[in-house]
Amino acid sequence: MRLDAHHHLWDLTRRDQPWMAGPWAAPIRRNYAPADLAPHLAAHDIAGTVLVQSSSSAEETAELLAVAAGDGPVRGVVGWADLTAAALEDALAALPAGLVGLRHQVQDEPDPDWLGRPDVRRGLRTLAARGLVYDLLVTPRELPAAHAVARALPDLSFVLDHAAKPPIAGGRWQPWADALTDLARLPNVTCKLSGLVTEADWSAWRSPQLLPYARHVLAAFGPDRVMFGSDWPVCTLAASYAEVVALAETATDHLTGPERAAVFGGTALRVYGLDGRPTTGRPPR
Image 1 (cartoon, rainbow, N blue to C red):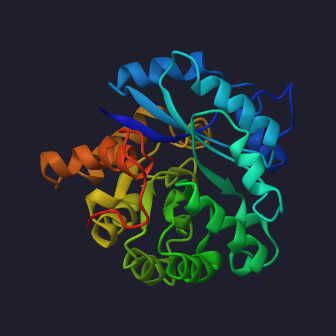
Image 2 (cartoon, rainbow, N blue to C red):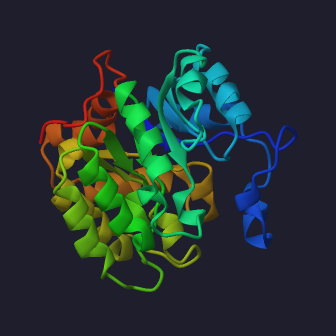
């Protein structure tokens, strides 16, 4: 099964998306429903998806889970809940089936060591106990904290979103590259090959600029710990769905057939437990 491990849907009539503040977001400041995504999936033979939260809202998470309960391609939801809440366990227990993990906009926290807070780590231990995954939405600034928490909680599976947003537009490589390599040494961390086009110059990027970053991800983590994600519709600020798929296919054209199958579906199926098996904090290399 080919799978898109990272996309969003939102309805601005239900709630604002605070991160969209500014004229830059005008092209995507509209509603996105499953029917808008369906033609892109069909065009690229993608049979399943992971739907990811876009706001810090328990209500949004419930709505995304309702989408997953339908007959569409959504196989699992990475939602949001307050990791620091004393009642986190009860809040998670009350949610319907379909939740595979949680995510928080760590990149927006003023404290770069937010992941090191005792109340946050208590919440992450609750996720591990429930067999859920934690998606890391971080930039290079927060990579040291991400490394520390993943090392401290080996029984929790972490998924690094957008390869920690490397500074592609500025043409910089360090300290992102070494920090990513260090994080990849931890066996309970996998990485999404996603979000790279919006870290480049939106109007002038070319594949040769992005491929070194994508292939560094593949070299550091190995194909069985990398998963393709479109980051649609955010990606459309810089590229079409077809261009994002083409970039990932070019980045993986040196891999074997089974290795590409892992990137385009197998890794996400295993790590998020979408194949029916429980998730584990120590996925195989």
